[in-house]
Each structure stands twice: as C-alpha cells, then as structure tokens.
Length: 82
Image (cartoon, rainbow, N blue to C red; front, side, top):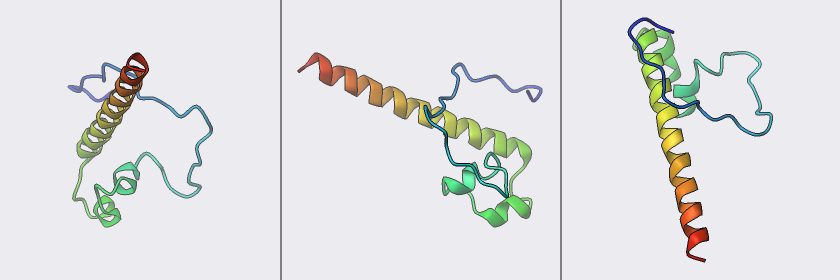
C-alpha cells in the first residue's frame, strides 16, 4: 500500500474461470492500454507516473464494480416484476 492512499471499500471481482494471461508483459501495467485509455508509448515516455497508474487502476475497478452492481440490480428488479 502506498502511503497516503486509502484502500477500496470492496474487493475487485475476479472471473469464475481461468483468464488468459500474456506471456511477455505485465497485464497489470497494460490494463489502461488494453482499456484504450492510454497509449502504449505513454508507458515508456514518462507521460504517466506510478501514482497515475494506481489512480487509473482504481478508477477502472470502481467503474467495473458499479457496472456489476447495476447489472445485479436490474437482474433482481426483473425477477421481482416477472
């Protein structure tokens, strides 16, 4: 944990199956690139700092969690109204 940063109040979800992993690079470092939020060259040219990486990873986790909660809410709402 980096000093001064708070922990998420939820645990990011993991897939209930084995996901494919890259063989030649860190998938964690490339998350913003794979999400089309950053360009690969920006990882090398110093555009973003380590703190920027932590911030974008947190933002992606929060966005994914909110999408999952919305999905679950809608699924439950549909079941109630059926």
